[in-house]
View 1 (cartoon, helix red, strand yellow):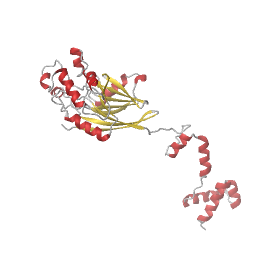
View 2: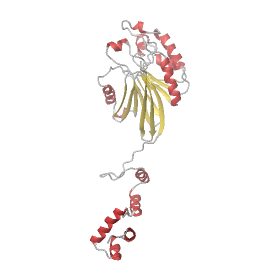
View 3: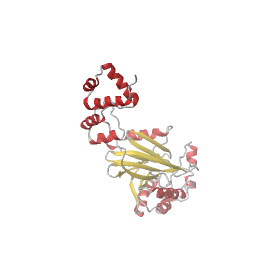
Length: 319
């Protein structure tokens, strides 16, 4: 004769309150019958687990933070004494990232920078970064002078002041690049530093690299460099990160120079190469080097551990 669900519920109720031995004695159950009733309970969907007792044991063995992690879906991993806790929460820092504007070159229409400013304004970025080569500079390369819309230090500096002076909403943090330093090598002029002295919200933070503190809890490094492109897009960034000693590693990097958009995570550093604002030049085409033209909006979430997560949105110019 089938055992009714109501009867099984009574057996389980005594089991949870008084234990197995008392239950068998009260209902006159041998081990075989008791085990059969437990299988029926499972089939009826009746829990045979004393949740209150188990929860009490968990509370005794774990800290409040670990209990919170378990409540949010954290798992007790076999082989671990404690629940591994990772907090992905944090205060968001939104960055408008551009690089390699090469102002003064015929392949760099300033309207692109204004369009980036429009997107940065809509996104309400906390600040803008520029990872070098603000200006095109002037080299001794044959024919280079014919690629310029603005000749020399004075004209290119004035153009940069006019263009970046249009942004009023937040700070711009910039480093110089190898093109900017052509003025330094030819006549000692530090063009990006001089631009910063004119514009109140344009800050020069270093030659070739510079650091920005994120909420005092993480470091964002801007990097330019004078090396070249690599066959594999990520290889250059990997070698840069390998070159940094452990104590000097930032939490995140935004790189310029190679005109490529790349995202990698290496040596626990969140690294972005954010392309360029300049279209492919004839020199680049001759060297078979492509240009990833565009800019990025990058979100970092910062907590007491550093940067807990990151997202990057790439805005390409298809020209």
